[in-house]
Every structure is written in C-alpha cells, then in structure tokens.
Length: 219
Ligand SMILES: Nc1nc2c(ncn2[C@@H]2O[C@H](COP(=O)(O)OP(=O)(O)OP(=O)(O)O)[C@@H](O)[C@H]2O)c(=O)[nH]1
Ligand SMILES: [Mg+2]
Image (cartoon, rainbow, N blue to C red; front, top):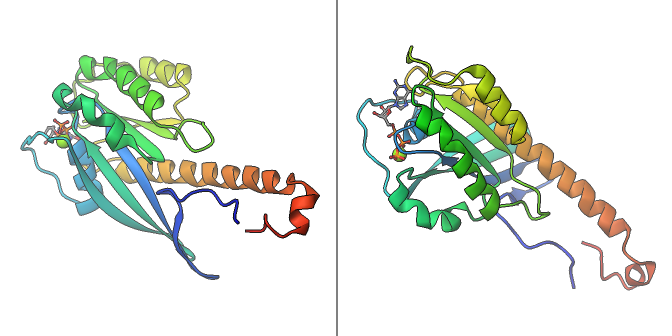
C-alpha cells in the first residue's frame, strides 16, 4: 500500500541520484490576434512571421531547458485559440496545467479588457492539486509598436488586484522579454512544487505511529 499522490504532468518523468527530468504544462491564453502563436514560435523556434494564421482549437510545442546541471525541464506549451468560437473547449485544454501566460496586445484596449475574463475562466477551471491557483505571468505583447493604448499604472493595478506575480512588456517580433517571462514562470512553478513537497512531508510526519510500525506509509 502506498500513500503517494497520483502522477500529474509536473511530476518527475525520469530520475536517478544525479539527474532529474521534469515535465511542465504551460498555457498561453488571451484574445485572438494578440500574438500567442508568435510568442510560442519565437520561444521554441526563434522565428517570427508577420502573417496572421488563426489557431484552431489548440496547438502545442515543446521546449527543453537545461535548468541546472542536474535538472532538465521539458516545457509543454499549449497555445490556445483566442477566438470565442473555440472557448467551449478550454476546460479540456487546461487540464493538468501548472502555469499560464496571459497575453494581451498593448496597442488594443479591448484585449486588455478581456484579460479579466480569461483569468476568471482559468482560475475557475484549473488549480494545483492542493487547491491553490497556478502561477500566472501577464504579457503586454507587441511592445515594439509605438501606439501604447494601456497605461502602465492600469496594468500594475490589475496585477495587484488579481494577485498576478509579474508582468512583462514583450515583443515576439523583436524577441523582447519572452525568455525572461518563461523563466519567471518556471521559477514560480518550481517554488510552488517545493512548498507542495514540504507540505507533503509534514503530512507524512503527522501520520499516526501505529501505521508507521506496519511500514505501510513509507514511500
Ligand atoms: N508588431 C508585432 N506584431 C506581432 C507580435 N506578435 C504577433 N504579432 C502579429 O500579430 C498577428 C497575430 O499573431 P498570432 O500569434 O497569430 O495571434 P494569436 O494570439 O495566436 O491569435 P489566435 O490564434 O487567433 O488566438 C500576426 O500578424 C503576428 O505577426 C509582436 O510582438 N509585434
Ligand atoms: Mg494563434
């Protein structure tokens, strides 16, 4: 008998004493045309195209990070279609996600107004196994465009009111702040995992002695 928690996407997929490999599922969400696919493509392939091809349903891409000499992280990036007609599928796509990038277009106010809707959809449909919300980073994309429609104070206020850990002005076109934003998200997930493991070990230590005698609770 084992009290180990069921596997989830953020679990260690391969581990020995000197090397660990992790798998994290991240969501990229926000209105249509804000640059989600462009961000994923820039991050995973180092490319940008000015043609707009709408995403149907969801796409996904993988990026492998050598996080430290002992840890490899496979990021599964789920690029979710922003168009409303695909909205009914989000619950399925969000399953097992451990982090999310919430994207808007800094030159279009309507896309910033929609961020709230995306955020509540996300918080309603996905939580970490302990019930807490997944780490989120807010991306004000198309920072290369000179027309800035949303003042910084408004973005800061939104982050504060909605407990969003960080925000970045990004440009998929000019490759600005995309690596930094993803690194922030990975860091937040790792911190959340460590806290989760500490909580788990406390719970295990709280296990009644009677059970420990029978050896049923050792993992
Ligand atoms: N100037 C500029 N244009 C960008 C940037 N990122 C994306 N675009 C352009 O914006 C348009 C839409 O980009 P996509 O990445 O396809 O948008 P999306 O959010 O994936 O849209 P959906 O798939 O419909 O949800 C394309 O023409 C891109 O070339 C950017 O950082 N700067
Ligand atoms: Mg897209």
